[in-house]
Image 1 (tube, rainbow, N blue to C red):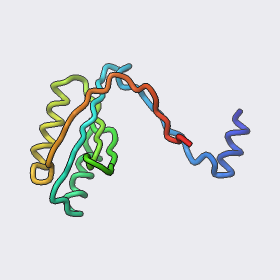
Image 2: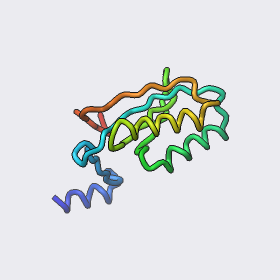
Image 3: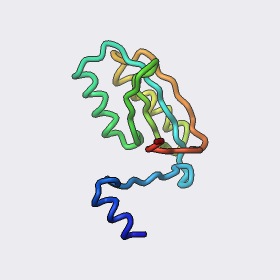
Length: 116
């Protein structure tokens, strides 16, 4: 098996590996925040991105197309901590956040990075 994987890496078919950890197993809850922004300048977007990148409870950030501009995944120990993150985002970026919604994730049923 390892020889096959090494050959696939050499041919650049496999570029890397990642770990998918279910936070519920270690006592955390996962929430998605869907954010719609307004008056977005490059400077504001950079500040928003930097905040999300450095926040210990924000595990990933996706820029989307459609009603919502960003999908933010937050892992916290409880609902109170989630509310703190949600409020912190709303307060720090009140000039650019038009709307935010949150969703509690109970269980990831499928996660496929390469659907082809």
